[in-house]
Amino acid sequence: MKTLDCISPIDGAVYASRPVLDPDTARAAARARAAQPAWAARPLAERVALVRKAVEIIGTQTDRMATELAHQMGRPIRYGGEYGGFKERADYMADIAADALAPMVIEDSDAFLRQIAREPAGVVLIVAPWNYPYMTAINTLAPALIAGNTVLLKHATQTLLVGEHLAEAFHAAGVPEDVFQNVVLDHDTTSALIADRAFDVVNFTGSVGGGRKIEQAAAGTFTAVATELGGKDPGYVRADADLDAAVAGLMDGALFNSGQCCCGIERIYVHESLYDAFVEKAVAVARGMVLGNPLDPEITLGPMAHVRFAHVVRDQIADAVAAGATAHVETFATDDGGAYLTPQVLTGVTHDMAVMRDESFGPVVGIMPVKDDDEAIALMNDCQFGLTAAIFTRDAGAAESIGARLRTGTVFMNRCDYLDPALCWTGCKDTGRGTGLSVLGYHALTRPKSYHLKKA
Image (cartoon, rainbow, N blue to C red; front, side, top):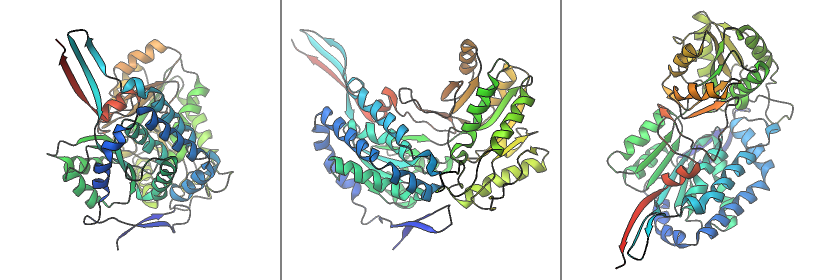
């Protein structure tokens, strides 16, 4: 029997192993299809309450969340898992559900009722990533269930236990087992189910290559596909910025979670008047990180989730240095040449280097000086991805003006690496086309249905 194995980055050992559903026995989608009408017929308030209860249950198990995440993908236990963001997102989507799903009434008179209603799409497949496995899953899981859809969750192999944890909590809260199912599928079975129209919506967060395969599987089926495929997110420090705040914010955005964040900061452009001071302080932040076993509460930087991910970052750094870049952080004693990777700050970088062009998804950031806003904007836009961009400045008008010229999904001012559930999480270019959270997140998981009722 084929299995999927989670290899712990802590020691390279198999932490969890689960059998894969094969195409002939994968009946989960059919069960979800059969269960959907009854679930959608339940009152909205009841569906909301069940989702809130599941979130509360997870909240009583945060130690399990933090410990299992450390073992599965290497995040230090000192950060306590993901419950804060998980709950914030679920709560917000529950709070706005009644308004977001209410009909848009055009006319309600003695003569006509004209309105646009929102109906659940049907069966939703969530393909979730390992880097923020609870928060990325809940982005779609909560609104999908609240809107009346049934859900299959296929979690990343690196975080096999997260899907099980979520399913246990939602079922304990009272969500029927066929309404929310955690499934272990390989790529071929997933593609076959999509091609067979098993789902009405597919929400995929992951690599560009993975997103292409999802879209190819869905070609000709008219299945709605939403993708969020990562980024190479820039930060810009204007001449009027608060230097210390910029360093603290951008370096946290670059190094937290070992840089394994789709909206993490991977390249920084600093006005030439602040450049030297920014680099000095940024290097100090990187040197101050404590790399080691994530089960140790003193550790601030754990291993990358897999040795092969660390190899990509090491290769990018080595290639940049060979091409003339300067690496400012000496190799840590705990850097094992494998998953445990020294955080790095690079200067002397150019956009000819992969480290400034391709997604790193690791604890490395390149820093370049710029002379003005125009140069910064040109460099920020010189990228195949478009997820977020951060501008550090004291001038909100300037940030808004610069933001209007950036090809990105979200513009931040004086912060970065944060997902506001009231705002649409989206991107452009090779980041893909998805619409998550906010009112628009409900629109992506429902379909409009128009009513034109002539009363007399």
